[in-house]
Image (cartoon, rainbow, N blue to C red; front, side):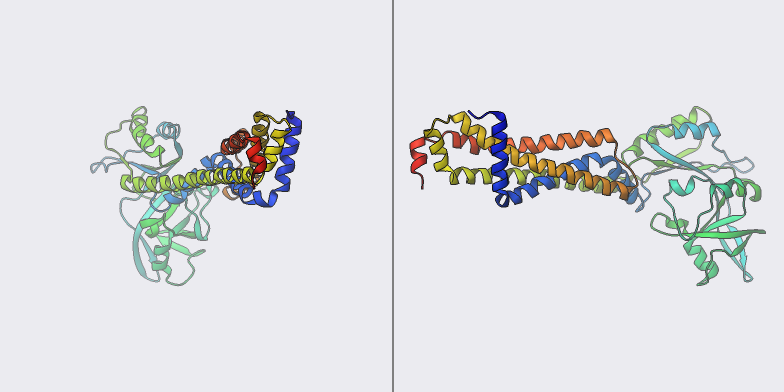
Amino acid sequence: MLDFHDLLRVSFRQVLRQRSRYLGVLLTVTLGTAGFIAVNTLGRDVRRNLDRDLDLLGGVTLVKVYFDDEPAGRPPTKFTPATLQALREIPGVDGISAMAMKMVNARAVLRGDRFGFTLVGVDEQFWDVNSFSAVAGRLFSPDEIAGRQAVCVLGARLAKELYADAPAVGQALLVDGDLYQVTGLLDGPGVGDRDRWAFIPVTTAQDRIHPLIPPNRLYVRCHSVEAVKAVSAAIPGAVERFQSADGLRVEVGWERLKHVQRMVWWVETFVHVAVVATLALGGFGIWTIMMSAVRSRTREIGLKKAMGAEDGDILAQFLAESATLSLVSGLLGVALGRLAMGAVGAWLGSRPPTETMWLYMGIGLLVALALGIGAGFYPSFRASRMEPVSAIKYE
């Protein structure tokens, strides 16, 4: 019986000789292994970016938290610093932005005309929590917020109404007797009806808006669509620990959330089915090729048995060839998967955890090896059961 070293040497040599025949199977198992490694290793980051991209369609991972309007003569309820910190510590919360909204429309005077719109004071977290970016100019910075600067960002629709076709960025805008410099414009699917809002630093709003409206409205960004339900349920309890929750309202777009969850589920299912189907196709290819190899080498099997080879020798030889084929494919898949993780990680702006990466690379290699052994067992078993005389006479 061949020892293990000779068995591997003969198997690798046979795979190398038949490389043109095995090319399709090599490619299929390689792609399947690479896909398995990349999907599982980068699944968390891909899912997070998928949630963020789909969220732009409807803001489904944003939870709006506010107090109902107070009766006349009473100041509006505001969120205390301790409450904000408690909300940030809720599992699944990615960020919180506090804003102060003026109760009545602001008025801007331009070219002798008066325009009405909503004036909102926002903090430094507002842009990130809402995934906003400027389509022109820039968003005002944390330094400008801390310095209580008279700057503003306009929704693109409001800028169009104010300035028509003239560039708005850099212009001075007179709002309720105060002069602001326009630093940038907002637009896009996530902006929604806020394209007619004017945004100023919350510190500037506290200085210039009278009567003063404290930060009394929050946007809570959740990690993912799955976290929204748990986060929204935990918010009232977190608020009650530090202040009264009378009149507290927590708004979630449940219908849009369900729609996005269905989309995410279908995307994930499609990706995993594609990986499994690729591996299954590779396994079927190995089975087909090994069956063909057994038929084409029937006389060789008969001669080996006539010279004293046992059933176990023939079984081990063909099973080793099948395992070697899948092992080579798995190694190529690991290399391709590593390259894919590097490319996708650079695109997502993140690096997969090293331990997780090595774990799934090892699992992917074992899956490929198991696929080869499983798919090649029956052809190998069939070869080992051949009768020597019948095999020698086979044409």
